[in-house]
Length: 128
Image 1: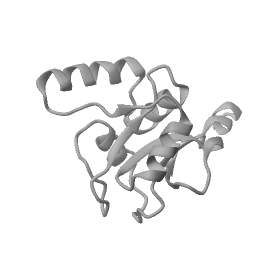
Image 2 (image 1 turned 45 degrees about the vertical axis):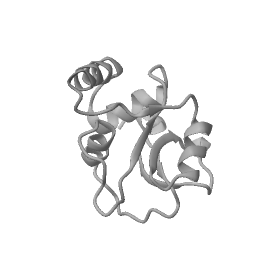
Image 3 (image 1 turned 45 degrees about the horizontal axis):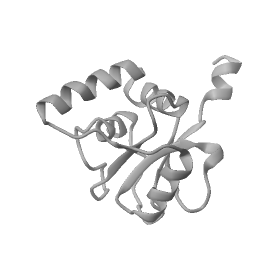
């Protein structure tokens, strides 16, 4: 691992409400949730994914890590899926603070933020 990779890894954390007590899901399980293929993780209640804006560096890093897709591929994916009516894209909030607040107030929400935005109001489920 290069120094740049080491410095950038672990920056984005997937967060849930503190009351959600599930294990460590695999990246593909998290990807399936954020891609509308499922609405639960093993041992979880129904979870509603929350995204950051398309131009967010955290969003690019998150989708590259869990789904091995870039922003254009995610946008194209959701265009196809929404056209067919098979699923709805995750709700998009403008900032880490908004995602963290919504997840902290709703046990059914899941999101991702920069590790530096983390506090005790949410629980880390995974990091990338």
